[in-house]
Amino acid sequence: MNDARRIRQALAQTLKEDSRAKLGSVHVGRHSDQIDEAAWSETLTVAVHAIEEDWKKRRQIQAALDRVRSGRDGVCDSCEETIANARLMALPWAVRCVDCQARHERFQATTTSVESSSIRVGFEQCYDDAA
Image (cartoon, rainbow, N blue to C red):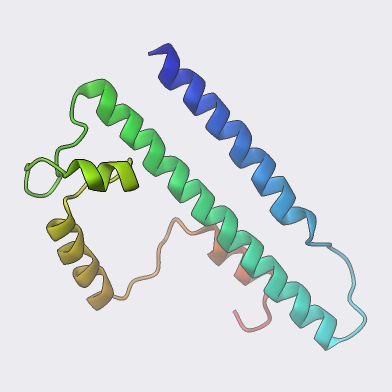
């Protein structure tokens, strides 16, 4: 239990430092022309996307730690079969076996929906003229 807490604390600190570094290149202020404004908007979008991906990975790792603690690690959430060790070694936070993950990704590709939890949406609405 202490190991999981220590891992979570280290992960949170790493993500905080990474987020600061990624946003450090984004300067807020008036821009001299439309090209500067467009470049700043693109930089901001890329930084926010990178931070969003970091937080997504953090949630996946925390969920994996919770599954280890509850004894559900290595069991596919979809079919209840054992997830191959090679998959878990490559992707320790995997929640589905390879076959179920492939089906899940095909399904996700056919559905087009905007994530309501995306922090990017708020940034784009505030800072992007096109939004």
